[in-house]
Length: 303
Image (cartoon, rainbow, N blue to C red; front, side, top):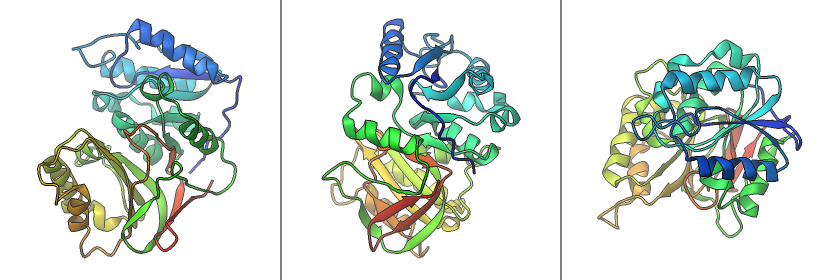
């Protein structure tokens, strides 16, 4: 698995909307935010295209822009503007051979989960589950989020994952495990089942996060993964931010659901990993080898 870590200030970054669109005003703000980080900017031309009120153009248009950014020798990194909806329509248009032969820093989360799965599993490259331009960098790119972002995408040796100060990673089920990191947004992971883009968890560490969903859907999607054999095949689970989860029973939360779902599987589970849809987002290298140890509450990535 190639850990692409050659993005430096002065390089050109490609901005894409693989899911939902933004306004012209927001586009200008996004360009300014990335330029302030020291990068040059090249934009896909569909960022402000409004298709059906929630997609930045057709799946083919969005897929071709991903291909074009990977093919462009001038572009050294690709930042997703935002998530939203519609990335499932992109998958059939990705040129995996082209992408594999032109690995680059690729960053996003949420609906971008589809792309993390596709690129790590088909293109043998590490991608980054981290802050997006409109969603984070424009309005709320705090110093800890920024530090985690740059340290992770530029890592040249093994490093320990760190949460923001004062927010410890916690243990749900004890144990040690190691394997390549996979996963992302729970609803997208569940939706991948039965498709050519299905998540592969065999021998891997599974990362899961979710936002603005009722506990009943958390339960349904987690048990979809269990019933599909995805939980028993993984070596361990890291739970990210479960933000604004709707729950009428304060005595049965998402942790209870997941603890029930992993019962009898003998895999360690750690939670409160601050990556997902929270106010601070630590960057995770998807596809990189991960070692988790609950006795030390440690998460270490190899480059």
